Structure formats: structure tokens, C-alpha cells
Length: 49
Image (cartoon, rainbow, N blue to C red; front, side, top):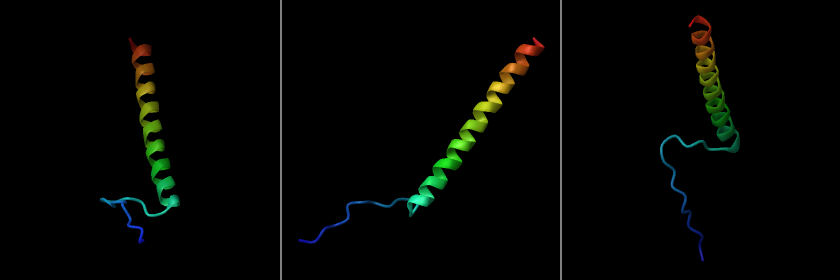
């Protein structure tokens, strides 16, 4: 019997493990930066008011 690949590749799916890790790291970094900016915005608003 031949094994058929049931994996469907859609869009820009990273090819290798390294590419997936790079993409995940980039997403985490941008999410953490936006969280930090939001927290700093809250701090400055509290200090002013």
C-alpha cells in the first residue's frame, strides 16, 4: 500500500521547523511589544490624571 499525504498546504505555511520557530518568535515579540506599549500608556494616563 502507498501512503498518501493528507496534509494540505495552504498559503504561506513555513516549510521547516526553523521557519516555524522564526515565525512564532516574531509573533511573540510583536505581541509582547504591543502589550508593553499598552501598559506604559496606562501608567502615563494614571500619572497625568
